[in-house]
Length: 492
Image 1: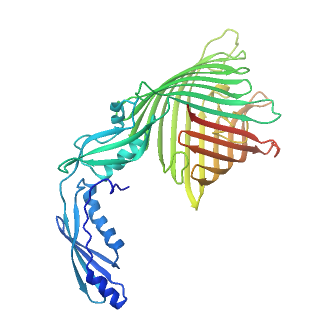
Image 2: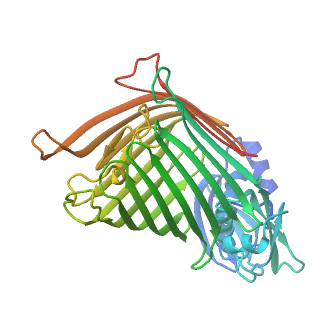
Image 3: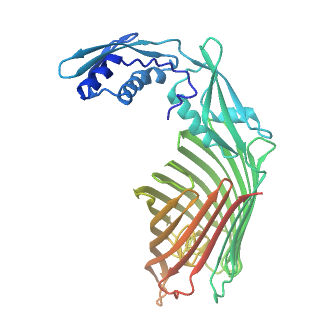
C-alpha cells in the first residue's frame, strides 16, 4: 500500500533529449544497461530493460522505498547524467538526498460526533514522536478497520507540518447508527415446526465509548426457545481488548430448562490474531425425573483471520480454535433412585477453518471444515451437553438442531459468483456424526451417520445493510419443498 499522493516525495525526472532524437533517427529502442546510485547511498543496479519512462520511474520508486520504510519521506532521487554505450545501451546516474526523518506529530480524527477520541486512539499503534514509515501507515489502516463501532474510510492522510520534520495523520471515520437489527428466519411448507427465527437487537457505541448492549431472541425449533442479554466494552489491559458478559436462558419445553451466565475477555495478540478466555456457569433443570445439575466452565480460544474483504472475500483464510473444560455436578434428588456418578469432568473442543480463493474472473471457491467434540465419562450425557447440528451455521438443508451428537465433522464446498454488492452461491455440506445411544439390551452402542445437504443462495450487502437468502435440500426433502433461510442485518 502506498501513499505517494499524500506524502511529499520529490522526484526530478530528466530524460536526455539526445536519446530520444537518436531513437527517432535509427528507429531502434535504447536499453538501460545499469543505474548508478550516488549521494547518501552508493550502489549500482543492473537493469537490462528498455529505456522508457515507466522503467525509469519503477527503478526510482525501488530506490526510494527503503528510505520511506525508515521514515525518510522527503528523500529525493534526481537523475543527473546519461552516458551512451555500445549497442544502443544507456547508463544512468541518480543522486539520492535523504532529507530529514519524519515523525508523527498529532493524530486527527474526522467525522466523529458521539465517539470518544481517546478510546479511538487506544486502538491505533502510532503515537506522537514515532517515525512515520510505510509499515506504520499499514498498521494504522488495519487497526482502524478493526474498530467495530465506527467505519474507517481509507487512506490515512499525511499532513506535513512546517519544516517537514513532523506530520499530522488524519483519519476519517463514519459512525455507525445507534441501533443494529439482525433478523433471521426459516420455513418449510407443510412442516410441523412452523416458522423459526433469530432476532438480535444491538445498541451500538453507548455513551460514545464503544460499548454494546444486545437482546437476542431465537426460536430454534418447535418447543425450543432461547433468550440472551449481552454486554461488551473495550478494555485495554494488555493492549487492545474487549470485555464480554451475557445472561441467557434455553427453554426446551419437553427436554430441559437452562439458565446460564458467562463473562470473558478477548485480547488482540497481534494484527489479525486474537485470544479469548471466559468463565461460565449453567444451571439445568430436566423436564423428566432426571436430577438437575450445575456446570462450571472455563474456555480458551484463538482466532486468526486474513481476508481481503470481511463480507465478500476474494481470497484469504480464517482459523478458530476453542477448548473448554467443565465440571458438571448432579444435585442429589430423592425422586431419583440411582445415578451412575455424582460429577463429571468434561472437555469441549471446536476447530473451524475457512478458505477462499479466486478461481477465475469473478468466480471464487470457498472451502470450510469444522470439528466439534465432547469428551465425557458419562455413557449417555444429557441433551444440554451434546453438540446440536443442523440449519444455517452447521449443516444446511436440515432443521435447526436436528441432530444431537458427541462429535461432528462438517465439510463445506461453496462456489461463488462474486459481484460488487454481493455474490450468488451454490453449497454442498457433508457431515460425519458420532454419538452413543442405548440399545435393546440396556447397554450403549456407538451410532455413526453420514449426512449431506445442498442448495443455492444469494447474498447482498451495501454499507450498513446485509441480506442473505438460501434454499436448501437434503435427501429426504422433495424438490418443491426446500428449506428457506433468510438473514438480514441493518442499522436503524
